[in-house]
Image (cartoon, rainbow, N blue to C red; front, top):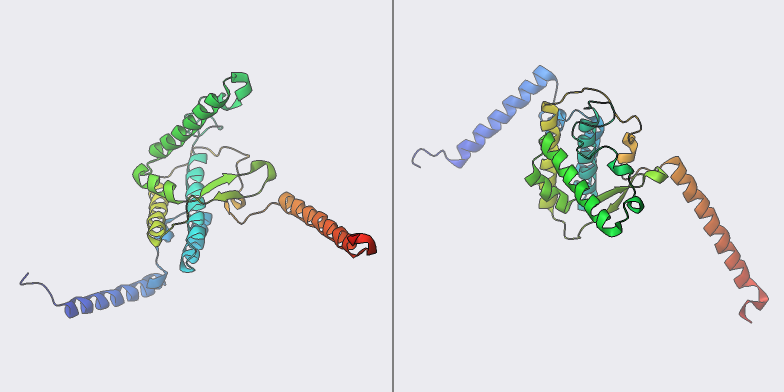
Length: 247
């Protein structure tokens, strides 16, 4: 304790060190210190874009939007990592579900609700097993999975994910912990990355990971619905203006 430096001395050392590092970065790499970020180590361009969108939402105090984009950044990181690792060109090396299991309908099994519950259990177990095999910290993932919004994709309409918020009491700590987890995971996977073979030719396009994405088909349906509603509103207004409308 007797050799402890005064606060003013520590601050001066910090300022000198920061100025030195900034000067070295500028001269050696042409990069400003404030531009340096852990995101530089995230190799997937869209993952970086989603995380930056989350950061922007966080700066605007929109924690729900921030966590939504962290969720899709995590999903794309995991899917991209797995989709480039295959033995047979169809399944990822991390898929543990038996071949053909998804082709058996509940009606064929004839056990209804029990089978659906077991399948949901197997699906959750499969997801956790895949994350564990990849090297994701399941303890931190459990926290992230608990606070992040639920994402469901409507494949039949070609649109992006449908978002369900788990609870309304989100805090800044939820976001910060989730942000650190997603960025750490993306960097850790990049450090031990490899590609055997591209698989799943019909896998989701990158655009559909974005919660704001709407396919041409979905937009066309919206346009037709808007026209239909407008015609009904016009008809109702015309009927209300008729002289005998109130009789």
